[in-house]
Length: 219
Ligand code: G3P
Image 1 (cartoon, helix red, strand yellow):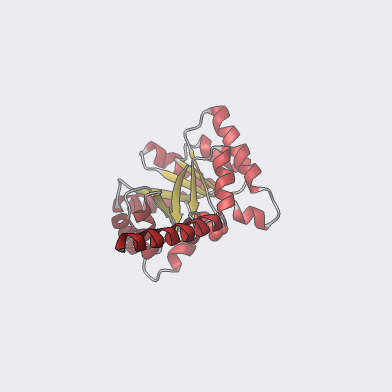
Image 2 (image 1 turned 90 degrees about the vertical axis):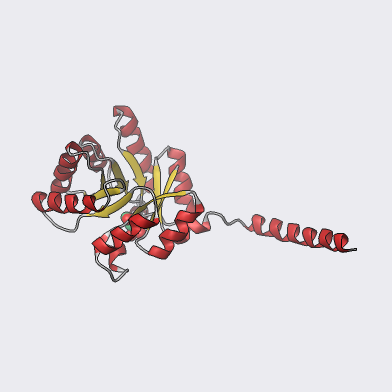
């Protein structure tokens, strides 16, 4: 499973990029607003920090405006920029047009199988169903991912599924078991994936053994 980091924070992206298992970045207007710079400044800097897909979301309404802004964002770095589009009719129209222009897209704010189907039908490069926000309202987010993966396979859609709004490592593992392509994960959750209490106990035991052996070498 491919892992992306879901942040616009430069320190988090630099550190995550150094780990090896983080292959891309997704941003959204809420994440951008935390950083006190313009979207263009932030996205431009991110392209210098990681060599992978970087989702930059359109912030305007209407097909013509979305298309114009998508082209501007894409021109920042055509090798890495993916245009994030909302799950609206204008977003889907823009998605179709960008596909014709060979500009990659990520259709976001997906909460249902029917939304997923029409985004895949409009050739979204990536589709982002949200897990955490569905769980928050008492719905089964993993069941949604399973059904989207089933529809994708049934019709051989090329769209890659990015599991988003991830809250914990369990979300990631359950998504991986469905065969979902990608998970975009908050920095803290990604970093926490390495932890296990038995790993800590094992490391402590090994450290004690290393110290004992080192004392023998000094004799
Ligand atoms: O970037 C989209 C998504 O991952 C947002 O997550 O935590 O705001 O529901 P969250």
